[in-house]
Length: 489
Image: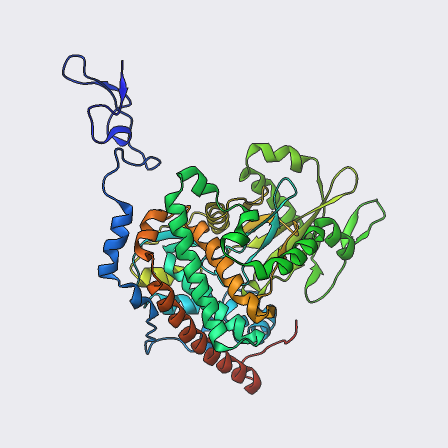
């Protein structure tokens, strides 16, 4: 009888032919080709021990460090640089939104923070990271069966990079959100500390689970109890109720009007929503053919039962303002709407800073594809209509618009909720990273005690202070007229 893996230490991951017979009589060995899809078996070494060993190279206490070099761009220059390639007339809206609060400034300055993070200690453990994992980029959305999922929900900057960058950005954003909400400094620091602690404990939990169980964790109904976020229950219930009503149908009812031929079309609502010339609309609608090629074949019958009726331009959130973003109205045979968002995908703002930090940066085939694949690598459940296309040579991602989305405003949480929210988002971030970084390796580094929690909380407070100074520079530039801003939009 042929034995799988017998007589070879490499077993399932052995190099060589698909099958072979040993040279000695009766020594039959099945040898499968080694691919990147299989681990070496029997396992060699211990990821947990490798993680522990990394502490000698990068002590966990080192993550408190924030050393800003003299070449760091000033806040205004960073905003101006990140506006390059965006639609010029929308730049004042973006600046106005960033000038609103320090937390809003952080939301729009992923590239500037990446510059700073590239000069901080790193373990060199790579994961698929969000790249913009601030506290407002978590939220609810609908799954294919009508249920609600809570997870990271913005992946414009996603790349393969250091897991610490996401966690430090989350921690700093919680300090800023807490300050904006009026919480005292101990509470703000505690929210950052709690987020890192929840991340660390969740990695330890995932490392102990069977791989399939860890891969599909964490079930949403268990999340609040897992993170002891009981003070958030009421808030999450209210957000969930609103999210269930946040649908394509509701958006279409408010943003479209009937046409003479029985269809519907968008209604101008400047500056956020505007109709586009026929040629531009045709280019976007025509690009949906390429989009279909990016979808699994089982999705095609669903879309084939809808017809495109109209296209409009819609301004999107703080970090994306000025990029090209469209909403496409589709109707089924009963006139029920499905709205798709076709959103420009720019190169990740983190990319040059990863190179500075010594990470390789593989060529990106298509920026929309990068965003979509990064999202699927981090979420347990993703939008079934996620895909990508190109419009007049520019890369775009495509997704459902208003598929029962809801979000918690972290800057509006009470003091007894902000730390609960921090723990919940920290756990979600760990789960998202565990799809690409071995949780045993990360957990081995993070350890059982609170040394990492303390260090990253100290970093978060220091970076929040720096962000407040950056925000003040931008506000001063707006007031002096150096930078144009449209406030309150």
